Amino acid sequence: MRSRPLTLIQDELVDYDKAMAQMADLVTERQRDSRPDTLWLLSHPPVYTIGRRTPAEHLPAPEHGIPVVETTRGGQLTYHGPGQLVGYLIVKLATGEGVVDYIREVEHRLVAALGRVGIQARRRDTPPGSELLTGVWTAETGRKIVSIGMRQSRGVTSHGFALNVDGDLSPWRWAVACGLPDVDMTSVARELPGTDMDRVRPIIAEAFEAG
Image 1 (cartoon, helix red, strand yellow):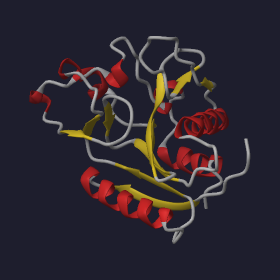
Image 2: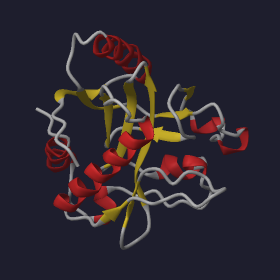
Image 3: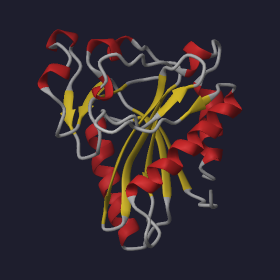
């Protein structure tokens, strides 16, 4: 994996709509070469985001009171909430590099970071005809711990990854996550009790050479 240092932006809780507007500005700046490749780490208040192909039967029941927002990233339904570390990646792809190539790199960087935290993890290849297995999974328990959904516009990536660190996992069970009805979503704290955001955040930043 080649070196690809990123500039780091750090925030705590940011409303999803506001984050999308700011991310669009960051992408425009990167397309104009007025900013370097960037990793933006933050969290969101509770929200479900869905891709254009997400079936209605995968959505949560409205009585849970969590908004559902359609997004421009790839992938299907994802939950965001406090205790989850979201990383938006605004990166100019190299000549001949596609967004899928970069997603593979993101998976490998996150696997390495989780190993440093103390959790053995892996990426998965998607069998032909199956729902995409993009993301990162725990090696021992087979649970999904990172969701990834990205897109590229004029050679610059946007959106990114969502790592469950120490938040409430209940909302994942109220909908069909990632188009996978049987997926067991997990968190760092579930796999390694006592591990919190303060420990995980700097390790993730370092994995992306971000500072």
